[in-house]
Length: 181
Figure (cartoon, rainbow, N blue to C red):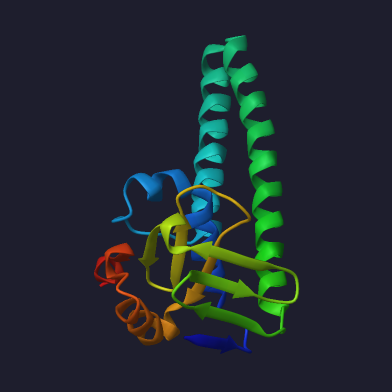
């Protein structure tokens, strides 16, 4: 099966894909889990960090213990790194969305191949741990990270299912789409 994708995916697709990449080890251990949007995940932790800074500042003001001002300072540094990280990944998603080049996904008897203007990833069937279907993305999780990760939008779900049936690789499929209803 050869799939040519000319349009770029939705923001949610790239956001979800980045979350799965960041949680690769967790998904490798337990593929039957819900994937979230990475920028919302980062935003949650930044908010928690900010609230902890406010709490420690309040405790310092009340108790006048230097430990709490030190903890607040550490959390401020962590929050700054979190904000920079979030800005970096928001920009990365925009870059993904602005990439208008042709992307080719080929599934054959040897495995899974992804080709675009910048890279060419080939994954043999025996090197694939899972193919996970989520709300916006279908991700190919390799057993070991070689060259990178690949995924396609769920709008191509039927084509992927047909190809997996054709090559008798349904055992690699983990359909998490029911977790999003």
